[in-house]
Amino acid sequence: MIASLPAMAMAQSTVDAYAISQNEMRGTARFMSMGGAFTALGGDLSTLGQNPAGIGVYRSSEFGATLDINMRGYKTATSMGSSKDSQTKAFCNNFGYIGTALLDGALKSFNWGASYGRRASFDRIINGANMPTQTSMTNYVAGFSSGYSPEILGFADGYNPYQDSDADWMSILAYNSFMINPVPGGENTYAGLFQNGTTADAMYTVREHGYVDEYNFDLGGNVNDVVYWGIGFGITDLSYWKDSYYSESLENAYIPSVAGMATGNAGFDLYNSKHISGSGWNFKAGVIVKPIPELRLGFAIHTPTWYKLTHRYQASVDYYSYYNPNIAESDRNPITNGDKPEYTDEAAFDSRINTPWRFMIGAAAVIGNQAIVSVDYERVAFNDMRVKYSDGGYYGDFVNDDAVENNIKDSFKGSNIVRVGLEYRVTPQFSLRAGYNVEASNVKSNAANGTTEMLTSGTDPSYSLDKTTQYISFGLGYRYQAFYIDAAYVYKNRKSTFHAYPDFNGYAAPTADVTDSNNSIVISAGFKF
Image (cartoon, rainbow, N blue to C red; front, side, top):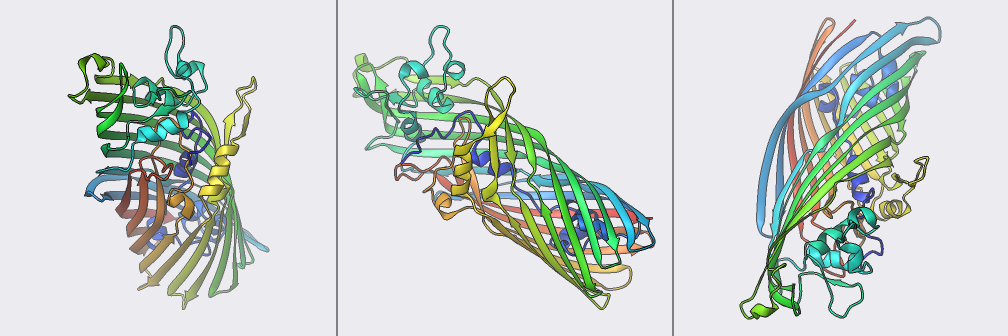
């Protein structure tokens, strides 16, 4: 059954909150080559964004920077076969400074630091086709458009439904482009283009890009060389773009005519552009305990990132239809027989999003002052994301979006991340490293199989849900007096499912299996003083 609430109203959505709350394993070359398993280790610039207690391990000051050369591959697989795309990017992944003051007494040192780190990159390309489809996007839109009168959805002198009504923007766009049409004799009900005997094909292309950058400011210390503590404040900068194209071609479709409705061939090309941007802030706190020299235990907690965001999007559709030859000329509607382009207004609105809480624990063993084995576990509470919208009042207050938050709880669950890192010191100057990192799916089965409808925003009903994400990494490091240089190779494999629009009324929407296979060469350099 179709949800009673419009799936694409001009507001924040479940899938937007989900998309921008993702993190990746990023940091220095040493950090990434050991799978990010540093909750109990510290002593690396990346720990400012992971466990702030790691700053307390420092006995000297440090400055360093990291270059990441990222080669991304994308594969989209459907019953029609698969397509591949790729892109290569290079950027500064991390840089930072640690200051250290050595002290007398129980507090052995006091440390402070600041760092920049790229927390996530949203780059992805999806390019596929489903032939044939079980239904049409237009039938999905027709279902949740019922209840709006044609007078509300249509334009009139001095009346713009995008600005002068509360109607769903996708309903307005579809009605004015003839993607949906009033049911003859019905009361504010609409029909899509797909009917008994219709055959339809679908094609789609989605390009996502953008980033989350974080600036961390941490304080920490060392108590009797046993307890290391740290607190941190993070400021994030976010920019997320999604450009999508969806096309259907239908034979024996249900299209309007002068006499009512008729059968003919039809199709449409739907274009959407969305941009979400803004900034946020968060707190982190952690502790590392060294009960014996050979063992370290770590714990850290991250508050949500409290985002203030601006959303902008616009859409257009090119609709066309051609009557079958057996339709009398007098029954052909010249308005709908041919091309019919339509555009939305440009939408802009603000929202507030709280990303998930994050909890992590770790243990590390130091073997003979020559080898390190480190294991982390992290829990990310994706089902606890919070979304707010403006109440439209004079003071511009924001209130919880209960519909979206309930949809989040119905669709997502906490995610489990396991990280394992190894380091072996071949000589006092040269080290070898390896790591593994795996994140289980945070999507509930009812959302993954389409039983729960995902709430989307704007006029783009498409979304992607992640399955398992894995990292395999190797690296090496070289130390010469105060100078160091590290290198890492990191392979990331992420599997996802793309949905062109939500399933509805027992009909399955076009889907595709998407695999991201990313290869990174990471180089870090710095010095201690």
